[in-house]
Image (tube, rainbow, N blue to C red; front, side):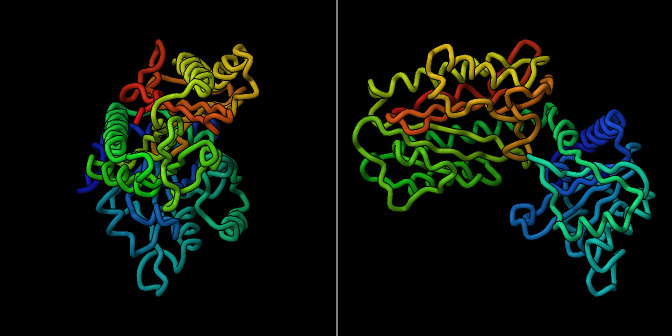
Length: 400
């Protein structure tokens, strides 16, 4: 390994990640892994590329065995970027080039096949991203052709194993996630300054917050949802409108969801600006959401199951006699880092055991006519005795 000019972390950290991944593979009986998602490839090698965001191509695909032997497959045009950003040595890259003048194949499939044979990865169990959360960045035709080329390779789903490899964060990763959370808060403070009810549109608010996020140090700012009022609050994942003016009457909740990024790590946020303060008819919904979030966060600690976090929020709603208000029943968030979901799902019944230094986003949702859908979120670091807020409490309303 080597320290390239744009490698985001010390080489020693990548060596630790590789060793931990190999050990986990042995525990699970995997001979090899094939990682094609940004989360896996960046975690193991540091490979950076704007093409990760475009989804036009896969900048690199990592193949590794349980002894730590590896290689990255990519295009010849991306080779110099890979050398400039990763911890790998040049001989660990296997690239394709359509003219046949360079590389080990004319296309991606040929290069992957060559690399598997060259490294001797031709017989055994190879783990791939085949289920929820982390997705295979390869078209189905290529994947089926790859399986036909290697009849003695058993391609198995290893999404949860890969999640587990990503789940624990180093001290440097946690530091960067805390920085991303601080960026979120700085951006939202700017939003509070510019939010003039009756004058500003959802899109104008979005632009002000995004601009502030970049100026505060975000490398990329997740495209945000900005929704003003109870009707808009039901439009999950809807982009901001250029035409919806934030109401000036007291009570409307303006929900903003997005996330700052530091060193390729994403810290999602959900913020709720409330025009004129919480109104009497909204208080019960707010109380329920805040109590559910507190119950869920209090359930987080090393040794607890991922499922117990969601179950705590559900019990809170049921105990209040408002189970029908609970819009997030059975779910309370996930791990975060390389993506919006990175690590365990906080889903009722999930037996996955939380460990120290995992970073989670805990979220609850309440539906009521006075607020539409109210979502509260708190990002936390798991420790032995409980949960440490990533950068202060984020579940309270921001009154404008």
